[in-house]
Image (tube, rainbow, N blue to C red; front, side):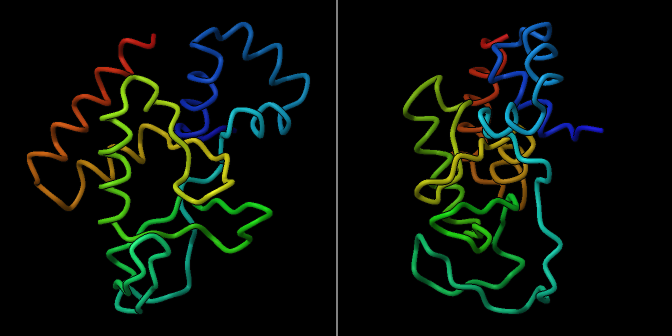
Length: 150
């Protein structure tokens, strides 16, 4: 069983060619997902409480756990979960959209991490708690890039 986030990333990686995806995936599911940066799980069940404080490794400020997000990814160089403040996520995604259509293949903000940010994460970060016009515009632009990639 594959999550929607993982399926989206795999389909985008294979440029929406499902036959090529099937052939490659069923030959080596884990290798295919690793090469595509497709993470199984879009969030971690963290034992911390919503009011616990977390240091954002991008902004070097402490944030309430509720004001952070992690896709659940780790990497060899950074073995702890890659959790960033929502402020850092928003600015990161906004800058990726400004870079153009390749934003649909954006990866986790942590150096050396190969996890691709799924459309569901884009929606959550840019369309979630904030009702900021800049973020709404960035999300709409991302969605246009995503739609044009089909």
